[in-house]
Structures are given as structure tokens and as C-alpha cells.
Image (cartoon, rainbow, N blue to C red; front, side):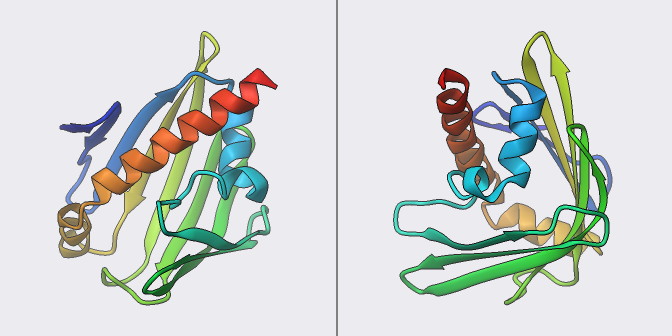
Length: 162
């Protein structure tokens, strides 16, 4: 197990990466931050010189999502299909980037558990192969996810204060 900030990363199988982080916010708000474009755009993939240009979500089983980030070197887009939507507890979807930086498609599973007013967010990403998973691990994704979760923490804190 490695830790980036307060996010824990484990490898449950040779094709999976699991990331766990606890947020000081109720589960319903964390769910909203993953599923409502107006909140998601404030934290996911946002970096100094990048913007979240497209954030479309059709939140239902069989519904699609489409995300595009715009940076100095161009656009980075991805999308997928929701296979399970169980608010505010579980969200499962596919993931495929427009310009694949790992082979195949991945499946994302997000599970939210509330404990004493805090929410444990467990994200498991399953890749088509060990090679794809290992390539993602070597890409620095842990730092990017940790930065995103730090921003999510800020967004949740601001929302709780409202």
C-alpha cells in the first residue's frame, strides 16, 4: 500500500487500483460532488492551466457521461456508460479516453459509506490487463488523484459551510 496525501492506494488484484479517502462531509453531498456537473467541474481534473470545458452527465443505468478538459496543449476527453446508479451509495461506469493513454477500457466503481458524519469514498478502477494497470500506476496518477481529492475536500468544506 502507498499513500499520497491522505489517499490510500492498494492493488486488490493484478488488474485493479483501489483508492480510499475520507471526507468530512455527509455522504449525500459527496455523491452530489461526483454526479452533479456544477460541483464536479470545481474539483475533477482541474489544474493551474486546465479547465473543465465539457461535463455532461445522464445519470441513469445505460446513461452516458462525457468530460473534456482544455489545457495549453489541447483537449483531453473521456466518456463512458453508467451500469449501476444507486444514490447515494454506489456508482459504476466504464471509462475510455479519446486518445487512449492505456490500452482498452476501464470500469470505475465508487462506493460511499457514511460514518459519524464523515464519508469514506472507495474507488476501484479495473483495467483490461495487468499491463494497462501497471502503465497507469507509472503515469503519476496517484499524484493527480490526490490533488483532485484535495480539491474535492475544499469544495465539500465550502458546501458544508453554506
